[in-house]
Image (cartoon, rainbow, N blue to C red):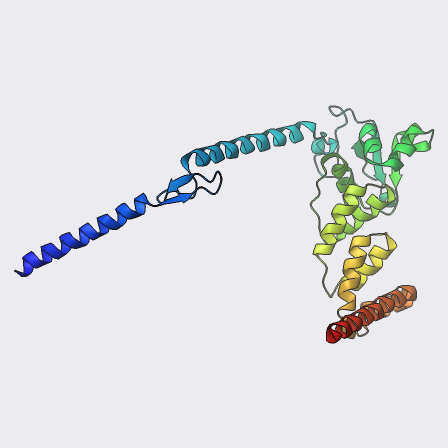
Length: 278
């Protein structure tokens, strides 16, 4: 009897489950894409929309691959790709370079600085300063050599490479060096690229130094970000060595910092008063 009862109960449960599943299968919902009805067993869209979405995804993947191929094709072939043996040698043949850049600060008694090869057409297209320099009868045009002061060989090499590839492997020191070169030669894209990197690296330890640097080189985004961080931590500012150095070197900047801080305090107080009245 117990076994029979068990089998009857099992059969009854199985029947109930089948009926429930049957009812679920018969229920319909609407496709989120085309609003057509579909069964609850489907995956949120009707079959037609699912297939169409899959086709669209494949098309987008093909378009992305095509764009990557076009970018690779249009990318200038940097002559620095042909450098080898570090700073000892560069090849000038296959790339048909017609100008070299030299870090003038590295010219000394030990010998001439290592030249960085480039193409005039690339320099002219990337920088209005190079354009004026190489299109007019200036020494650089006649000699085919552009001497750049106050820059290291590594920074100059990274600068020229960026003009060809729009790529640079940055650290904070190199970002500062490249930003200076970008400002000097009016390469706006590079300047914005370096500013964005330096803003991402801002913290309380370097915000004062970066504020002074940004002020010197007209880097507004970096200036605003550094100033905001400074004014949020003014209670700690006067205790830092960087602050004391700034007072001695450029007290005008300290005045600007305090003006910004006072303005921020006034605005905060005004906002609180208006909220209390409301």
